[in-house]
Length: 389
Image 1 (tube, helix red, strand yellow):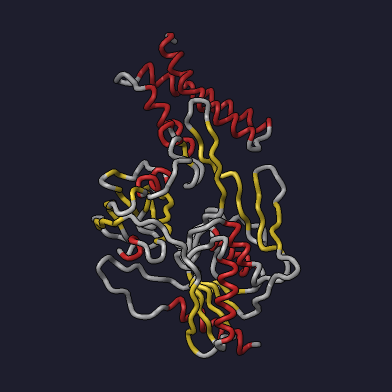
Image 2 (image 1 turned 90 degrees about the vertical axis):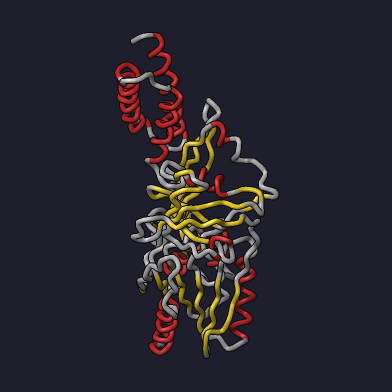
């Protein structure tokens, strides 16, 4: 092995070794670690073969960059390798910036989790499950969620061009959206019919639990004896805010668990004074229900305080942290998972509805079929429960 090759192998292998060491700090035991170091030896052999035998001169930086991305891509959609340039944007100020209002995940390309209520993306008709094939002409085939969010963000009032692929369409649909500064969204209630209240919760913030309490009180005064909570397309907010809202409905018991690797799961429980809202509840979910909305739905469903109606949620119930690497790059790593009251992981699995309702895909430019079958099924389910009681 020449000195040049040794130096190149060292340059590529050191960050990979840092990944393994970080893994040790985050909970790996010594036995498992030993197995990983065997893989590092194989990795070194592969790099040596590439540098010595590839038909053209190899760009070591490019090889290293690809290797780091490959390691992170094998984890989950929310984990990512951040190069030095991206690390500088992690704590960058966002004053004056806007976005089109999309929550993203990754599945081959970037994929829409949900479009924020009232956002440019929602007004353009973007839906959960849409694939974002390109952003301003740049393919998202190898784009992380972190980088995708960065590309969508920009000065409020500027435009961003997206190529969207939906369903079985052969060609993407081009949309141009104006970035807007996100505004706080509060729950809104209305009466559906005699005795039925409807509450749309578009996000979970620090204020959401109190706002839900007030809206439900208003609906109750208006004659509501049952409640539908719509969490379809709700994907914004901190996970803990979902639990704070769930405490309004669950008087006692475990709402869910937090679990870090190698540690005992930590229960999140209702306490004395919780469970002030006693109306029968149905929670509406779809593939765009994520994060705090998922833990809320799981808490109510797992404690038999609500029937979950609609589609399976996406399964985005982890917490990430940024770990800085020796060369100035970093790793965005999922280090904490949230579990159902029964102890099952929500992350990448989601909440399975008690009453499943299939929602057909609507092509761009096609008017959806009138009516709301998920909402209708929820009202039917609540009414049946009332009659049975």
